[in-house]
Length: 385
Ligand code: FEO
Image 1: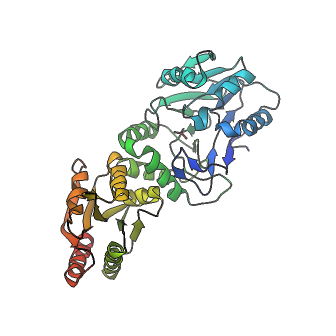
Image 2: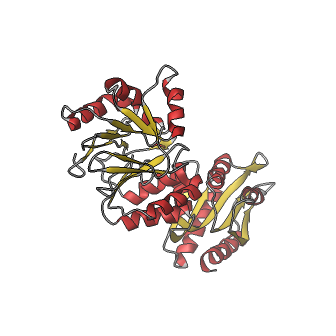
Image 3: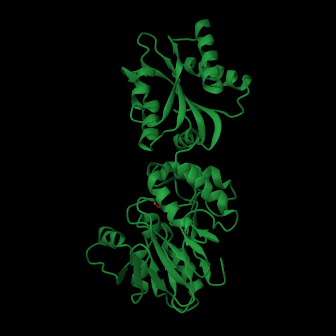
């Protein structure tokens, strides 16, 4: 597939993967992107997942049309992109691997001490001329590993962006970019907002016509939309007004309270109300929702003296990703020791800029009429104030 006259796509679609990176469900599969720039010198950008080495090598040979590559640009050493480096070097022993020193130090960790490819270590701002095309390297540590770099091709104004601007989903599935890019971003890169902000600052100095990520489609129009979303996400700003209610329920009583709260919110005019049963939903969808909206409610029961395990894991997912800048409230349920709200609040004690609702709903087994009034008060407080 041609991206420009000189840039060819040689990536693959994965519809076999069960859990991407060992934890993310990907019902629409996954794309591992790889590119070639054909010039006086030929550069290949990254390899693909181990299971797709044959397809990738076939795509590469078709793109090369009998020529030999001069460089393999390794932007990221995570195996979904690096797994075929040794195979590439064996096939093309005269080609050089271009990467950061950190990435080069990882090569023997993955491929063994006996594996010593010809390497060129590049630093921030250094260039590599191919002929017409001049590649400039932009380091992007922790987006998503410490060795990551992006590459800017001055001739075509293309930013090869490694994992940044990637999404879940194979390229032969036409799903909404933002939905699966947001779930991907908060699931995989969400902890590293400050590093993404640094990378966006560097990118702002470049005249970018097209973004070629390692997952998801090539982005070549409306780039302000995608870059704007990355800025919002990495600055931990809410993207939209709305209330997400994350809950667990053992016998349905907490769920009943949650559904009443959702009804009350809608009756007040709240247009976006999302409920997530944390024991049953995709946890990464719930993480995505909770970073997307500006308000969140957490509803759970006392369990083993603390809180229900799925809620505990969920709040941990949020706090380790620097959850902040939101308004939140609590609903707790406990038959003899209703302490879940106190325990949930304690888990957020190091989170920045959270506003806590004064109203906490405390249910002792099943909702009573006083609880219904508290739920109404909580709905008004989180929505109206
Ligand atoms: Fe697509 Fe961080 O690997």
